[in-house]
Image (cartoon, rainbow, N blue to C red; front, side, top):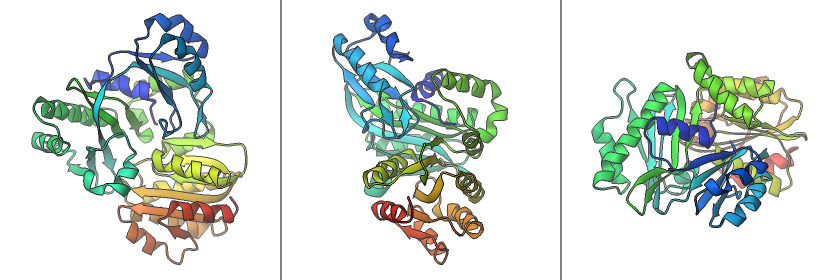
Length: 384
């Protein structure tokens, strides 16, 4: 279950992770007129969607005058990002940023460890970091029986270019993120960006939390509250989505037309592929993010569910290994292919153990490439 930014930040504040001092959720366009005088200036309007690449899609607006707020609020409510309409708008005070960092903590199901990823280059998708700036992405494996050691947090802070008191502030934020991951049975806790402000503070500008659906029974009250919050702003689950959520899927969107089922392991690469398919004349029928905690069995079961939808005429898999291990995921794909020989499948695989994955997929009648443009063109030619 992926949380909206406003939900994730509410949890952040409970764990003393610094966020903006002002926050207000606008649930309808009409509501803005009743709270105009309460909003700080300048402020930021942020579309609340579960899809990725929100900023690039125009889902974040900086506001300097009160007069422009109603127009921008209406504009955001009419915005559709990755096939998903804006459900609400989070208003926050504007923060003067010196530079942006990236930090996340996630479960690595292949090693049963907890993985910390961090970079001094925040504000861009982690998939892009892995591809373009691997030397700027730092990884730490954490033993869940021991937790984060203080020296690990301090060392990581220094690699991110922090100094003085901010080293200890960062260490406390990292510890809080770790406790959220454990306390909520989360699969991912991410801050991107974590801002170093011009006044010398660290503040979480954005927040992402993905909860483990199979662990729902241990957190029934929390899940109930979070689901009610999402339902209040228009989120509903269809039966297919519910099944995929149980497997750990973090996003599922079903469109009206038949065409390509797009399956990714992250929001950034998923939405990039979605945009590219539309630009090149293809049709996306289903959009699904499998999330980070993927095993062969999860992949196999997810593909079975997706392929059973009559709208699915071809499958494009776009995987970019960071926390996910590509060869492990391919075991599930190969099992699915053995049982489903007719449906066209194109796979774009890059990242962790991608060379092994490419070798494994030889002779499976699956088109494999590392180039997303080639993958999209191929799947369109095969019926998408």
